[in-house]
Length: 137
Image (cartoon, rainbow, N blue to C red):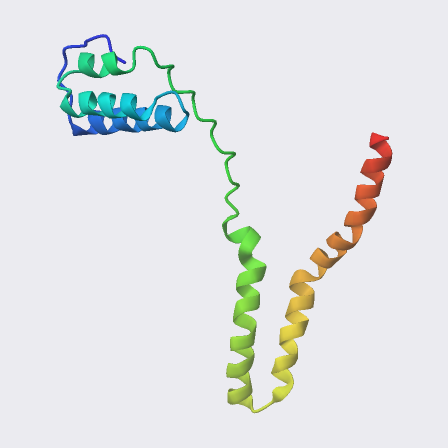
């Protein structure tokens, strides 16, 4: 844990130690009585050395694999959705201002213009799957 075992610890270190202890318990490395005994030691610990004695016979925690970074889609990937959400509102406003119902035709037109290429993408998908299967065989 640390090179200086006599350094005093605070609540944050005790909570981290309890979390590590809980992880070992959840992994099945400790029985209920061992967990209770060690939890009492952690709660009463004053120095880093007190905490180190609790974990002497337990393995170090395995590093958690970082979750793959989610690509920040940003405004550029979401703009069709945002525009499409505004089109019906705009059509209603223009309907009341001009009195012409033709503005409602902008709704399906905008949908076709903004999302028409996605339909083509879905159409090609099964063909691509077949090609991949053929290449794998």
